[in-house]
Length: 258
Image 1 (cartoon, rainbow, N blue to C red):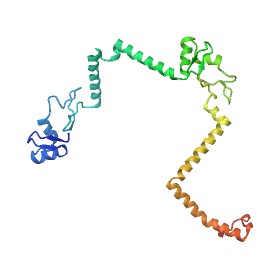
Image 2: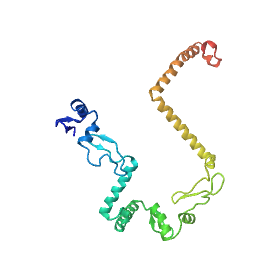
Image 3: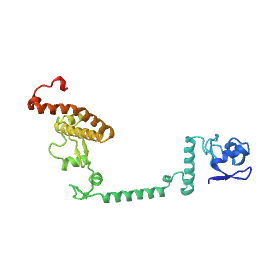
Image 4: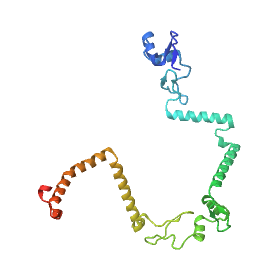
């Protein structure tokens, strides 16, 4: 609705020009005064939670229902509770046993669907049944009363696994699929030559990528052009010297070439 009817003169006025209409033809300087006199309803402008005065918003919306966010949140909770009382006979749906059973059944169904889609690539060494990585842990605890770590230690643990590659101390058990950590702490991880080499290669790769990315920008291209322009005169002097004397590059540079 882009226009409204003036309650005083009955003319249809656009919302954008309604404030000017009130000032020009009715000597009313504020839209709020007009709204209070001709459009305000009973109890409007009072907070529905605490009863304090609320702020006037705009002509089409009137006053705010609540005076602050705290009262608004409490009012939302109250309306939600009233709705639940009408639908379920309780302030919260989870207080109704029938609703709880319905939600529980749906969650179990969704979990079974999710687990059914997971690849069953793990065979239990105790009963020889196949499970997914997630279902394997639940199977061990519910069916065989064995923790994942104890099962891993007995059936899957490799020689020297669980010992730090650097200092030989015991390492922490991670998961059924990952087994034990290779190092006992961050310090031992950094002391491994292979890890240090991979980290160095990664740093070099990232540094090269950053430089190439910078050179592709306008700023980088301008900087590269300045380097080329600065080095051109010097390269010309070297070429001229080599033309005169091929062995010139073996002689220390003289001040006139620098």
